[in-house]
Length: 95
Image (cartoon, rainbow, N blue to C red; front, side):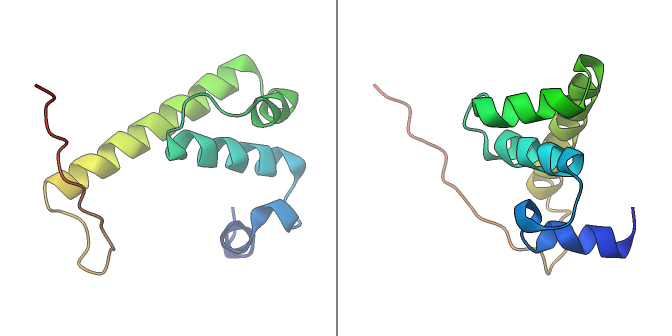
């Protein structure tokens, strides 16, 4: 990984010169972090074209750990001051 490659992620990776493998991983990452359930079929099939089942499990586990730890950092108030955060109210319990 180089700064040049990392900069392609920030600037519309789908149209970048990143490899199709990298684009598939990033599309899966976006779908995973969006939290809307399973990734769309086209994302899943692209990922399966470039990664083994074991690699997909490793990627998903890494993303889950990152996502969970990032939530804990915010809850504990340890995020950097310059980091934007969004406060969502706790939903009311239906009665």
